[in-house]
Length: 302
Image (cartoon, rainbow, N blue to C red; front, top):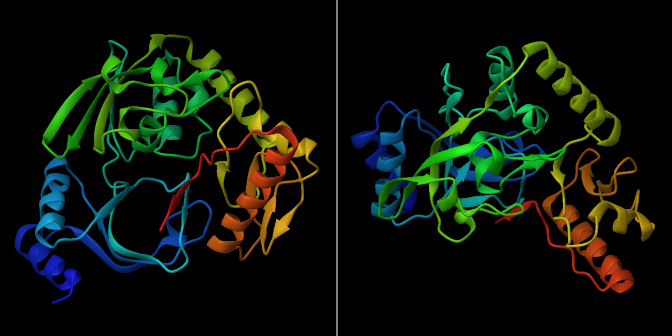
């Protein structure tokens, strides 16, 4: 019996109300608009669902991956022969007068930023234009314009192989585009952010200004996964790529953006192989010129 037949039976027995999508086309769920079908995609709505799904995958002897907004992933055209746990239905946001904000993993950063601004809480404006969800942002310590998740995360509740744990900011081991989740696999369920009181109008102005800067400098008119490469120590990836004369370089419909060399964009029908091939072209040229190997920031998923 195929794993997905066992999986379907266990879902019917233990989580009959949960939404399940068969052969879910990943290009519909990623900002790159690239990716073949995932055999099964499931949409938990509460912590207990995620715990049960972990157990069901174990019983069906199938692997799984966790997906939020899909804004930092490149998925294979062949698709995924395992389960995708899509967290976007777990998107509650609760703002407390104390300045604490409870956020479920699937909540969009833009929504969190707006609710914080409306409540007169400052310190999260940097995240307003980041097109991702809370869970993914914590995993990679997402940041922009001088702000990062490390500055605002008080604690995170996550499901690990040994059960659910709540980790403090220190225990999360935040670094540049790094957290404990790079070392120890876990599914983020929710987080508590702590912000400072501020003037709503001033916060709104800051958000608008940062969004304007983002639109001016980044190729938001095309599908992409954001910054393609991590910033090497002592350098800026986009500047290095630009100095190699790579702006506009294409492989198929994948192109190094003519607006910002740090982005690879999908000009229409780019495939996984197009983007992967262009990543290798960029890495090779940059290494030959600077003796620096660029490390992808985008998560490559097969």
